[in-house]
Image (tube, rainbow, N blue to C red; front, top):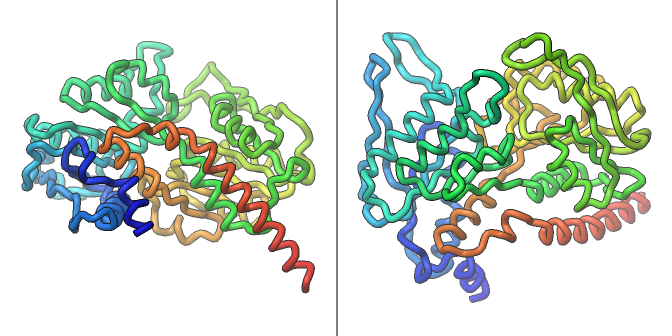
Length: 394
């Protein structure tokens, strides 16, 4: 009975704005399966008899590369949620006899195709796009395109009412669509929970733990971690060479550290993305040179465009102790097998958010999980006390 009441608080069929429908695009199947499993479990516990919320859809391609969106189930009157991973480069299609890997452009075009295929018959259309298309091109410095802002305006013009993303590179891009719903979630609770499970001896006491921002752009998210954990915050300033552009960016000349002494402390560094990983490793080497104890890095999106060898070497040599990354975008199988990598499951968080939107409930507590983190830290202190007692008994 208690389980049913709890489930009804999350998913009540009587208060849904419309029947829930989920459309998973190619490349987002694994994440969608996990999200849907939570929703189905809550719905069944609340008294519904449902096997799936999935709406069957696909984007078949011709050998010339042309494609079309096809929805084979009814969507009339549904509250639709399109889930797309624009960063999944493992998806392929036949193109003039060659195997072509899907790019972010391909994924975004498929999203628009399926929105078109819905033909305006849905009650409401929402897009769950954890890693934003064009999100790294978030501002204009010269004569440059503004892909992310234009993408949001396109979705709005097609009838999309809400876009849900996670840890946007620059959330100010929502200014492009001021009257469309735009929710930027942060998986702070999920990463701390995963880190505490992976390292039971980790102490977040002020004297033994510290948060360091990798640059000024990531200062906001790292300030949040330092604030909820009650520890000191340091930061690095990236000194760049603005006279040249290499691989689409101004190369980093040096990382300058600003903050108190890190000697003997475990360090936590959070960023939105690990791309090549060079910057994160430079920071790890710098912190170790300052006699930091252990270094833990978190990136919401660990894509490792330059491969894993450099991180393998840094782990073997003791420069980095753990890298945490979410399952919000494609993770190559060999990455999941690395002893230094820990996957952060964010599917339940997204399922809770989708359920809240589907019921027109407040999402304030989901966007700012401060209370949940406080409860997590209280449990952590109890676990630490038991862990230390256990160690002393041997």
